[in-house]
Image (cartoon, rainbow, N blue to C red; front, side, top):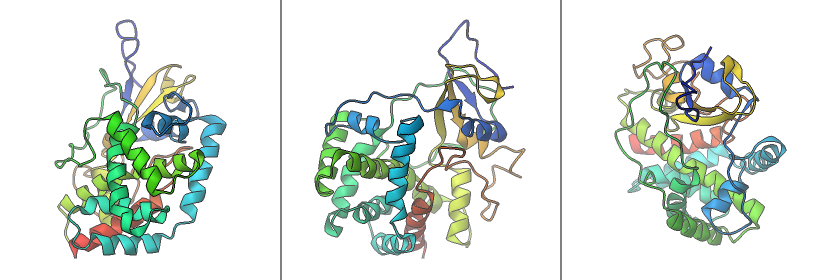
Amino acid sequence: MISQPNSAARPAQPVVVSRYDEVRALLADPALTVPAVPRPPFSLTVAWLRGAVGRFADGPVHAARRAASVGVLAGLDERALRAEAFRRATGHPSPELVPVEVLAVALGVRAEDGARAAQAVAALAPAYLPPATPPVQAAPPVQAAPPAQAISPVQTAPDDAAADAGLAELSRLLGDPEPERLAVLAGLLAQACAATADLVRNALAADAGPCPVEDLLAETLRHDPPVRALRRVAVRQAAGGVPAGTTVLLDVAAANRDPHVFDDPDRFRPGRSPRHLTFGAGPRPCPAERIALALAAGVVEAVRR
């Protein structure tokens, strides 16, 4: 049974879930969905983009939008992406932004405009996620991973005006596609921006000896995940007795260090079985896992050689 906040005192408080088995069960529970966002008519604004992507949709709308994203990703060659990420990262002043450059070009931006597209996405990404409600009371957590020491250049206070300008520039660089396709492409780039940059940064900062880059990235995703928590809302009673209407914060960083699942969980040890929850689970896993890993691997290989 998941501990609940004192509803009489603070009815709107979210529940924080941090144990691995409970987080995994709730990720798979159809009773939990993403918090709703407004769906304004088309305009080149971050508010429109949030309402037009699959990430913040549910039911048939989510399924259709997710299928569109999966279709785009299926046409990408991860080996070619990894090789291009390696090439661009060699000597690059900001290698953590290379994955977005490479992905933008693969999605239709001209090769010479890859860096400009990455800057446009970097302006857009901080405002892409809806504002989070800070948790006030949590279920008893296991020890969570410490915050990353370095701060990504895209992790700034959200600025909707800058984000809107970034989206307009990105649309131009993509050839001003029709709105549904723009939502797919811009959503993929926005979601990849900070997460892949932090994966690269955390992997390069890790205290790891010689090891395959795949093992390094897998352990970085467990030990220092770029996405540390996920929010969900219960539309009816969910696993563990979570009441309908409750906002749930799934503490992925803590779940990835659950001592009941991972031996010596605070130790960075490449080569573990990749059981982390960083890419999600259940009906809403990250659709771009293989692409993100290919891009990150190319950059990390180039910088570490």
